[in-house]
Image 1 (tube, one colour):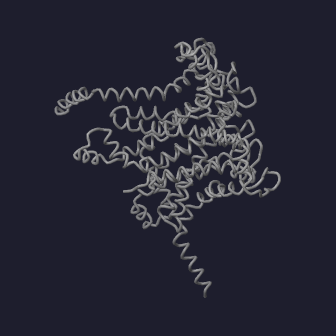
Image 2: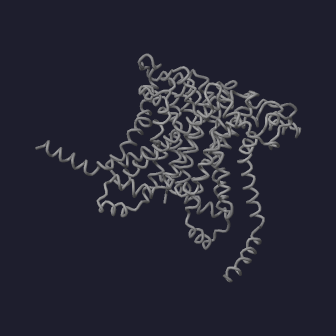
Length: 296
Length: 303
């Protein structure tokens, strides 16, 4: 205990000495970058809290003076009298995103486990194809996807937003890299105890793969929550629109005066969930990303 | 006899590979139906005239020749996308790397800094376009116009999102803001993976400062992450669409913000000319795929 008491002031001194010019520059640079990254988000938060007179004040104001939740209550209540209530869009986004995330976690984890731990014939080729698929955007396959979804009669349904986005190369790749670190001995021990292969996967491998699939879940959530292209081509009915598409309709271009406040609130509600999800899961995500390199 | 051997062979094959494939099956089916086969199908349709009502009619390479020789709007979209990608791709890539590197140099507040840097990449392009449209609003109420007017740099407000000269740069600024964190996580993980013993060994070998450390130790060790980041940057930059349409509308003023994906969307889902749109998709495929291959070559692991 005394040793600690002696050590502490020394450390403090050490830190003071270290506040050199380069250290100062480093923190200055970091602060500048944080301001650039954060300013538009700050503006978003402020504008969602501004009463109407502050939104149209001249000169324009960045910081809100009389914050109010009026915009949010307007958005969630008075707007519901018009055609589709805003809460419906929130539900649409939440439902399709959560189902897609769960399905993608399950399908990609099972696939990666099968590929890495059982190495069936042709697994090398399968993985090579997955890596190749990393290097083209989803827009390339969008037309055939539309034709398939159309043939299945799923256009203008939740399933159109879910099914094509389950088997994603990026997700599979992440889990596969992580899966390679799983020691075979633990799995083997469970097999000797007579566990069926699916039980080994579900009770042994999945808990060990938790950092990998949490990461996958975060990325999948962010991508699907923000996705604009899929609902744009698959959804025509107003009641099935997800938040990005609904927001586009709501804002209706610049200069819609009466709605500026509610648009601010809607923008806030659309943006915050994915940031929140990431903030909560950050530790697990970092753990997984260590395995994300491609060896060529 | 032969049938028995064959059957046995199949049984043997199933015993060896069955479990693996059982696990892989859901992924393989969905991946084949929605990713791999579509590339082949798009390739086929790009050689046809197909409007979803009449059956596809094979027309050889006429879609491609029309695309390159007769479609001025496609060439504009190609130029815009190229300019966009060449500028925003590398800026986003290096900004991500710089941020990740700076963060590893500090001891306190790493969590806060990484959340702040990464937050823009987590936002929806359409949602943030609403905020940026206010910042770049074309009247005196726009924050940026107001700032420039008060600083005396301009005499009257600039129509940032209506004027064909400014609209693409504005979209690039927004996209850089949104993409400066995309590779950040990958790079940060890569940097934290480098064995600290390497740095100590290097110091003994005469590495003097953080920049030399970065050049001779960190970068070579991070090749796999650099490659992963580069491929994601390319795919992201060439897929630009959300922000462009949200800011400039569709069609944009004088097609100044028309991108390849916007062109694809226009032909596929407003005109339902699936054959021609598939040719546009193939152009996008060839560009990103080739650049991806080049990256794999550049970042080849020599060790």
